[in-house]
Structure formats: structure tokens, C-alpha cells
Length: 513
Image (spheres, rainbow, N blue to C red):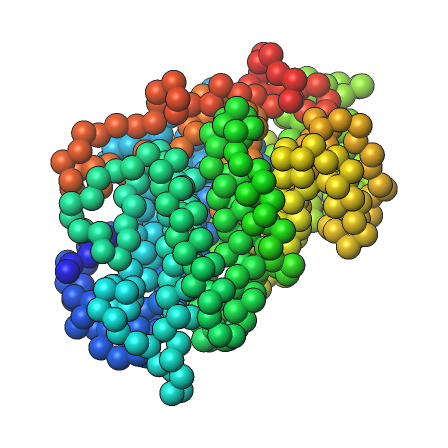
């Protein structure tokens, strides 16, 4: 059986020309992928294919040429006026829909992620086709590791489908026995539900396994034990359930008891795959922190210094400061303002594209990593899982005290890294605001899309921002599906956000959050 997914190879050249012209996009289609039975002839082949699944997805979601950078910009987590990776097009004010045409300069933002994701899915589905479909057993060092590999493959199935449901309005649901070439699109709620089903299948399989240690390379820098993999599965399930909603109303309707149950069994450690900038990459972090390319939106700085302007003035002159002048560096009791953010007096963005892109800050937390783009690169922090527990306690059980205990945990990032005093929210709304403020400060540029999903599910994406991407135009053309983009009333945000300084985005919106 042939794989419909297309693999792309690209060359990206970064230099002065990056800011003055478009970005290079060289694509090569692979029509010669052999049948899985021909290449998965041994246990070693099967283990290698299974191990490739998560790596390929990790690289796709953390890629420069995927949706991660534009999602961060749409969320007003970062700001970037440069055109590459659609950051300018999708974060300009007023917002614009995604140009879903094959000839669009940045069509690769969805096309590559789509194809690389389904390539990752194919890797694990090929293995499951052999184990579940043909009863093949897998051995390593004389030990039967079939259940371990099957549980891992179900995990990858769940993560891949989960993020298809988070990013696109619809997608294929592909199990190992799906008749490739005859799939139909399923709407994102069904794709996300399928993801949870796959993750539950992983949990059932792993809970019935003997103890094990995952082979080298499954997640570079880790040899996860069975217990640790079970924790990771639970955390991803909590993530997907919590982040799927497109509106605050949908968020309120989530089964938060399920989110709580998953998160409470989730990771008590931080997942930070060790990148080598070859087989394991985190290009999003590289370009998201590279001096001169992307900066941190003032919305984030305002979370730490409530008097600091949450927006750059559109005319570059009239600031909402007491003296009406540029405020200079921010001031905060939060130590992370100094450890994680670098004040820059001048901007190198193009003013004709809008002063609202300007910012005084870039993110420097990963500067040590940035020297070589090599080493541990966090994608799922323990603190994120803790904050999911806190949010679920509020939403499911109205347990403000329980959520507050997490925020005030001396070992949590808010206290341990921020050095902040205890908080005592009086209402659920206050507690949730504190949780999301903390998420906004601590989770910057971790797993691609996190800030975008948070802003989306709380109605804080600026009005007109796309709530999801359409199926790539290239895929639509291949299957003869009418081209479309996500610009309908249910595809665009009607939201806004308000800084602690009283400024709102988009300008003029009636906004109280």
C-alpha cells in the first residue's frame, strides 16, 4: 500500500535578503516510497519506524516553515513584521484570512506541516499494520517488546491527530487499517475526539505492559520508562482536551473533570528533547528568539509591569504614559523580566508595515541554546501541566483554594523563578486570569501553538484572526476538493484583549478581558 503523504525537502537561506525579499521554498515530491512490507522486514526495522514517528512530528510542529511562528504572532505573544512564514500577513491589523492558494508565497506554512505530520503518522501506522493487522511480534535483545512498541505507536497516533485537530478546521483520521486514498475529511471536534481515543488506547496498552525503557532516539536525550511514558500520554491528553475549543463558550463546555484526571496523572518533570539541529530540531525557538527577527509583544511585558504600555502607539508618537513619552525599560517584581527578556532601545522592523509591530523586548531565555541550536529544548514543561490542573480545579470543581495553592507553590515557576509573593484570588475569574497570566509569561515558545490555543479558547485573539487553518490548497487539488479558506463566521475570532494599562486590541474594541 502506497503512502499518499508527500515528503518535502527544503533549503532556507537566512541573511540580509530575508528581510528584503521572500523566502526560498524548494519542494521535491517523493513518488517512490516502497510498500511497508518491503522495508519493515525485521524487528529492528519496525522499532526504527516507530521511533521516527514522534521525531518527525516534533520537527514539524517546531519548524520554521510550519504554522508555529505565525500562531505565536496571531496570539500577540510575539511580534514580527517580516514576511517569512506568514507572520506579517496573519498578524497585521486589521487581521486578514489565510491565503489558501498554491501560488501563495507562504503556502508552505500549512502544506509542509500537513505532509510531514501525515508522514509521521504513516511511520507508526505501518508498524501497527504489521503488529495489529498481521500479528507480527517485535523483539529487542531477545525480549518481546511488541506491547511497548504498540503503546508508543498509539501515543504518536494520538498526538498527531490531536494537533491536526488543534491546527486545522478538518483533517483525515487515519488508523493503521484506513484505506489510504479514499479518506474523507472529518471536522476538528471529531479529529480531536479520535486523538483522545488513540491516547486512551495507548494508556490501556501501556498499563498492561511489563516495565520497560524506551529505546535510544525515540525522544532524543531520554530513555523514558513505562511510568514516564504513561505520564506523558496523560499530559498530552489533558492538553488536547483543554486546547481544542475555538471559543470561551466551547471552553466552558469541556469535560474539565477529564482534563483534571489526565493532568493529575501527567508529567512531574519537563520534557525537553535534546536537539542536534539535524535529526532533532527546534527551528521555531531559533527564529523566535534570534536577534533582529522576532520580538516579544508588549502584551506580555504588561503582564509583569501593569503600567507598561501593552501596545506600541500606531503613530509612534503618542504613548499612554504619564508624560506621553516612550517608557523605556519596564520595571517589575517578577524576576523573569530580567532573566528571560532583553530590552532593546531601537527597532529594525519596517515602519511602513505598521508601528503596532514594534516592541522593546526580545526573548533571551534560550540564548545559551541559541548559540548552536543544540541541547535540551523544552516543549512540555511540568509547570504547564500544573497550571492545567489549576485551571481544571477552578472550572470543574470551583476550587479556587486548590488552584491558588498551585500558584503559590514554592517550587512552581511563579515563585521559584519569578520570586513573586503569594496571591489570593477572590473569584474564579480572578483565579483564571492569574493562571493565564502565568501561562503567558512562563510558556513562551515552548510547544508550537500553545499561546495561540490559549488566546483562542478565551476569546482573546484579535477580531478577524483565523481560528484554524484550512486544509492546504495542494492537498485539496490532489483530491479534487473545492478550494476554500477559513474566513466564515465560525472560522474567525470575534474576540479582543485588554491590557492592564487599559489599552485594547484591536483598537476601539469593547473589551474587558
